[in-house]
Length: 243
Image 1 (cartoon, rainbow, N blue to C red):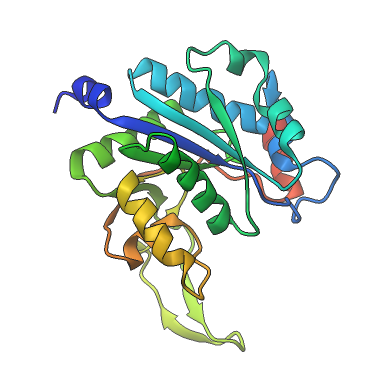
Image 2: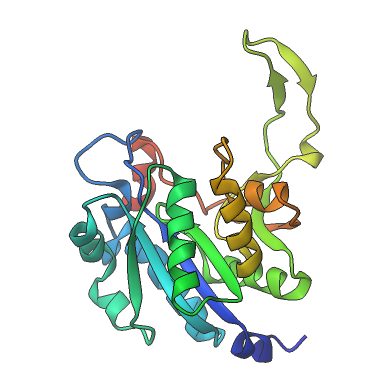
C-alpha cells in the first residue's frame, strides 16, 4: 500500500479527551493542564499528533479537544501554547464534554459529523503525554490497511485472575489471550459515529470506544503498544513528568 496516497485521500480527525475531573489526582490543577516540558501535559499530546500529521502528510480535517463544563478558557490556555500554535494545522476546536467519557466523545464525534465529517478518527487521552509519533502512525496504518478499528495493546506482565464479589478466584486467565490497551484508538469514523448513536440510547456505560465498536459489530485489532505510553492517573505518576 502506498501510505502517502492513502493519507492524502482519507480525511483524518483527532479527538483528545480532557473533560474529566481528575478526581483521583487531587490538587487544584487538572492533570492534563500540569506543566510538562515547554508546555503542559495536554499540549504535549497535541504536539505529538500534529507532528505525526505533518510528517506523514495526513489530510487532517479536524482536531478536537474536549473540556469540562465551564472550562473553555482553561483548556485553551493549556493547549494553545506557542509550540502548538506554530504547527501548520491551526484550526483546533474545543467542545464541552458531557457527564462521562462516553458522552464527551460522542459530543466530539457529533461536532465532526456536523462540520464536514471524516474518514478516520483517532481518540486519545489528554493525560497520556508520552505518546510517540510512531505509535500514532501504527494505529493509523492499521485502520488504513484493514478497515477495522485499532488500539495499542500490551500483554500483561502479571498473571491475572478473575474474582467474584467476595474476592475469591473464579477463573484463571491466560496472559497470552489478554491485552492491556492504551490510546490512541483509531476507527472508521462513520461506523464509530453510528455505533455511538446506538450506544447513546443504551442503559449501559461503555468503558471505551473499542467496547462500543465491538459491541455493535465492528472489529478492533491490537497493535504493539509502548510501555512508556502511560496515563497520568495518580500523584505518583507525576514523577514521570518531572524528569
